[in-house]
Amino acid sequence: MSPSTDNGVVDTPPLPPQGVSTRVLGGIAEDATLSAPGVFLILLAFILPIGQMLLLSLENTTGGLTVEHFTRFLGDGYYLGIVWRTLRLSLLITVIAAVIGFPLAYVMAHVGPRLRLWLIILVILPLMTSVVVRTFGWMVLLGRGGLIPFTLWKLGFVNRNFTLMQTESAIVIGMVQVLLPFMTLSVLGVVMKVDRRLEEAARTMGASFLATLRTVVLPLAMPGIVAGSLLVFTLSVSSFITPSLLGGVRLPVVAGSIYEAATKTLEWNFAAAQSVILLIGVFLVLLPYLKLTGRRHG
Amino acid sequence: MVRAVPTTVRITAFLFVVLTLVFVLAPLVVVAGVSVSESQFIAFPPAGFSLRWYSAILTSGAYLGAAWTSLKLAVLVTICATVIGAGAAITLHRRRLPGAALLAGLFLSPLILPTIIFAIGLLMLWSATFGPVSFTALWIGHTVVALPYVVRTTLAVLAESDPFLEEAAATMGARRWQRLVFVVLPQCLPGLAAGAFFAFNISFDEAVVALFLRTPDLVTLPIQIYNQLEFSPDPSVAAVSTLMIGVTILLIVVIDRLLGIQRFTGA
Image (cartoon, rainbow over all chains, first blue to last red; front, side, top):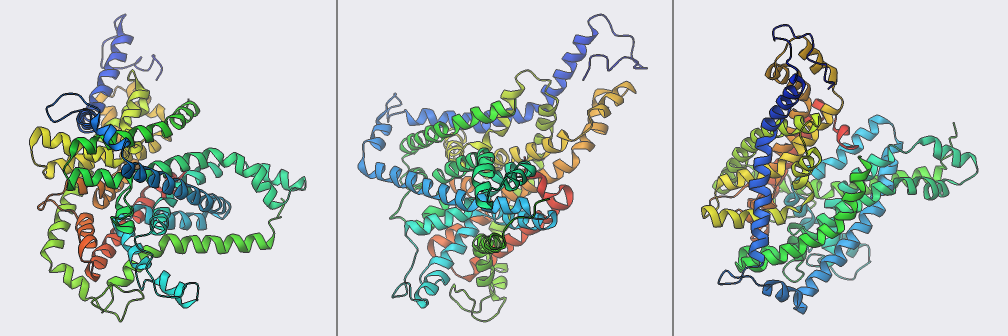
């Protein structure tokens, strides 16, 4: 808003010399009032709980400071195995999601608007469906006698009826389906903005379709792929409903271990320490990304 | 214009998209299929056709109780998140407050931070301050998770609004509150409405916060499903799940009508 807005106001007296600044202050006061409930909620119900968790992670039984919960987690081969599984699976899930998500988004960007709308709705529908419901679907599909093991058996790929449940494959299949929409939508947003004439120019100059895709579209779509990958990776590292239902107790992940400690064995300080480790991990992954996007949006 | 995408590529792309959609939608279709099965056991393809599992959940106290909790919760969360989110989005759009970038980060931070970390923090803080968790704790938790979505949809709408309307109103003598109520808020409405439906969907489907804050008396629909899946899944779980998928489809249609679902893909 320009400072001259209020000139010509009929029912108020002419502005005093410091009128502009009072008006600016009035605007700030109005905005502060409008955003106060939100600030209040986020500070009290979001920042404070996380702060409380940080404190608990450093607290020993008598209330003093200690790092024993961290050393317990980081010094135990069992827990390091959980960390390793979480990282390995999350990386695999991210790569598969990118490999499926990029071509899907590319096709979605190149079809007509009506078809694109339908494709977007079909991608968003699972995204907005509860994770518990989707995981249940995979339990039916992957379990003993489920459609996928049964088909593989009947087609002769395996020699007996088996279950895919409680395997790392089940976790990866389920998680890719849960997280693929995030990747697709991230890439789609970027691919839609790629100038179509660049592709046409490359084709006119004799590049094959695949060469154009690789040398023109892929580099330009990279910001979207990177953003989607970071999103999928962080969501993957911190999710536990799908891994715990599909992988079972034999294949715990970090978030599952936190859940166990917080709700089953009731070791809150230990759960808090694990959460802080997860938080630091996620933050380290996200930090470069946040810096990059922050710069892009000015 | 160069029409030079080879036919083989077109066919491959077509098959790829169809297969991917099958993969993405399979769990939902399977759940719906199981729900109409006559059999006692969870089986896909379904054996026979029967709505007995739907009548089973409609007479089950556990499911009805959970559904009532979820519905009450989702409505209250929607109201709170929408009202609070409207104020937040308007101020973020105006950028008059000092530290606007920090404020934007604050409002959108629940979107970035893993929900499990927030959920466990809320459980610990609530227990330390007020004792056992209650409906109110869940209400607050879900409002925090839903708030960024309302802020985002409203910001997206405000970005396309006409900034001169408010100036014009000011020139014509409208006071601050009049400009807010009669000029700014009506412009926010499509975004707020879409945000409200998102908030409802998130609260209704959310499972992480609800799982940490569950007590025997405080069980939402997703948690009731989760409990059932952990111990004794039967086709009634599929019937509840299918109803939840139905609610989601309904919400997507409404959001699309209000605002166009496509608007959220580029943002």
